[in-house]
Amino acid sequence: MIRLMSLIPLLISIVALALSYVWLHGMPDNPATSLLARPVRAEVVSVDVAQRQQKAGYFTTDLAVTVRYAVDGETVETSVRGFDWIQDLDTAAAFVADQIEDGHMIVRVPASDPRTAFRPDPDLFFMGGGIALLVVGLCLLPVGVVVGVAGARS
Amino acid sequence: MSGAGARRRPLTLFVHGYMLLLALVLGVGGAGIMAVWAGLGPAPLIDRIFGRSAMATVVSAGWSPLAVEGDNPRGFVILLPEVEVRADGDEGTLPLRGLEPRVAVAGEAEPPPPLAVGAEVAVTLDGAGQGGSARLVQWRGRVLLGIVIGLVPLLLSFAVLRLLVKMRRGLRAEADKTEAAPVVRRRIGG
Image 1 (cartoon, chains in turn blue, brown):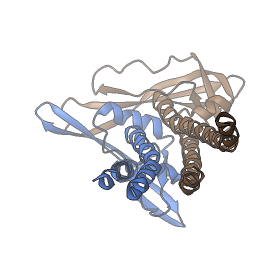
Image 2 (cartoon, chains in turn yellow, orange):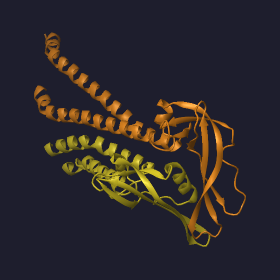
Image 3 (spheres, chains in turn cyan, red):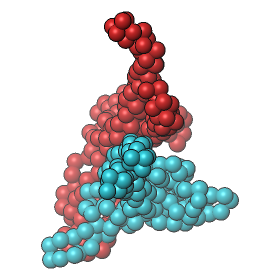
Image 4 (cartoon, one colour):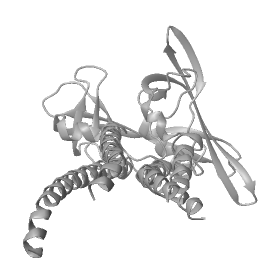
């Protein structure tokens, strides 16, 4: 019983690390790990802002930006990822006014998949939460190992 | 006593090595996040701190409309600011970045321009010569929040390093104490 219970800190740290991986990389549409990708100055082909009626008086906003850039001697035309959480017209307008300059914008292109373009700024909510989970997981990992070893020896 | 200490040693070494690694990862990661966020956005913080800042005069100001498609019964339209400034002492005009857009209804009276013509604004200049732009001097909440999020792991890495130094010092003091102990005990017993 004590041996089993001494594995609890290790279990907590593994769960925290798995959740932080999901928050930092897996779940958000513009993940914090895209900060590691190379910034590329891309030509904006089109900006489409559209309202969609969900209910009688309730509208949501879709923002779609198509960009064109050259990578590895090949021209890629793709839709920028990271606008899933834009729900209102003000946020869409702020993005267009902030990020698009002279028909160009910076996109982040991961080396593993150059056909994917992320918006340059990651989601702060997921970045902060993912870092908090990562710190908890990393700090509890040695505690888990030490307690686990001590429990196994008892 | 010394036997137990020897048995605990590899585990202690593992914990201390891990702390060093953790401090390095948190420190490099936090500093990297801060550096990236300082360079993001229409008015990068890094330009604000290190760039050339100047006063500029607004030459022309207006809105450039961006149509909103889809189900749009009220006829909303996004107005993007379009402002040109002339930096004091320079010849050509530069586009001004970092102004707030507006959402308006088509057909209604257009809101007043984002800045009055002739107004003086503080800007940082980037890309000297043609193709450059003037960036409004301002604090951006989102950029600052990103930098604060990067600051947290950086400070944590300092805390871990400090704890590591304290623990190594404590170990050394303990080792000194155990050597001195038998002498003291003999004196009391004798």
